[in-house]
Length: 522
Image (cartoon, rainbow, N blue to C red; front, side, top):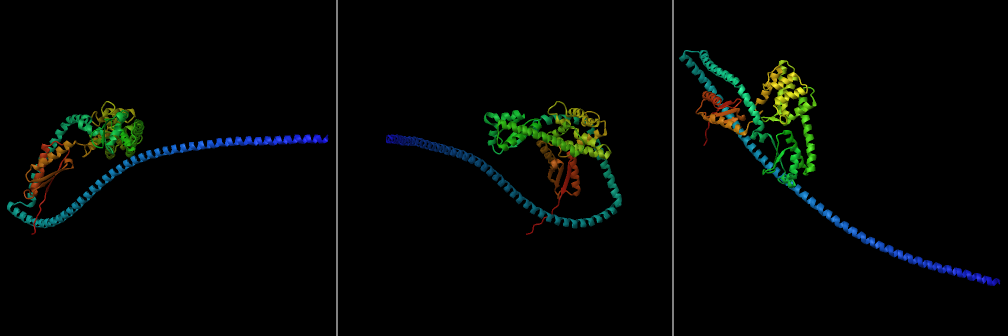
């Protein structure tokens, strides 16, 4: 019985053990199959990932090639433009070098000519000194003979000659006084003409062209198209924002800005120059640069006013009035800069006031502000005198300054000594040579008239009008004219200029008589 139980137990154990082995084998088989399937799936995913990665790499390579090609095109275009700029600069430098070489050659020739002339002049001086010595000896001999013949000593003859000269000079003095009296009588007419000239200065065509336009040089004519823009978009934006007219014509590499307001014209000029330099010309960029340039010009106006006041040392002044002084920097009258003119008047007034023992600071202040109305006469109706008086009263200037402003053109009577000084300084600054410009036609006509008058006189071989007609150099023939006749010719030319011309100012007449002894060695 016991053995049966053991056999049965062994059988059960063996059965269980065998079942476990079979189950384990089945489990291993299942695990192997699952692992193999998962491995195949993972390998397939890896293969797909490799294919996808290859596609991405290939696409990236193609995109990279496109980017490189685009960058290469941009670089080539930029390089081409830079090369053209360098070529243009090299051409200009070559032209300048050629011009400098020509000037150097001309200067060397002139220097050699001057050395030759200096040697000739030294020889001539030595010859003249010998001749003068001989002439003095002969003159003394002749004078002694004349004293014997005329029964008159040298002093008596000198007194007789001086008497005759005095009588002739009295006639000229009387003539001079008469001319001054007539000039004083015509002063009212001259004042009326000055007002007309001022109106013409603002509105006449030729002056308008000179004083209301600014030219801008372009690097090339291609820039004109960029300034105009597609369908004129850029130039319309420029004109609307800046308030000016931009003229683009056939003039090569140049455009013109036209505007009566000099400050707007200056802002437009700086804006265009900045845009041309930057190269990006588009409406948004135009607005940005225009605002920046407005601030720049306004800052320069304030700085100009502050510099003028500091330079003159006239003390504190309201900020608004300083700005008005600075605005004169962009205002001209008869071609004369208004700020420079005002500073010059202030200095002259201060010097004269110091000499007379008057308040120099107030005198300079009155001189600086005498034309302050010109800072507004482009924008507000009224003469610059009326506008200047309003500004001075508005900002609490003294009665002396106000009277100097309103009386410097004799609109009212001068009440203070400084008012007379301001008027005198204003006249001096405007009347000095070169202060105010003449038109080209009038300038040429003046020179032609002076030379024509001179060449009509016998004995004149050549004549040259110099210093805008303020000096006339006349060369006479030494064989036809002696030294005494040279003085007579100078007087004749002076009289003809006074009677036949009506140009303002003075003309210095210089008659040159040169005798040259020439021999030819064979």
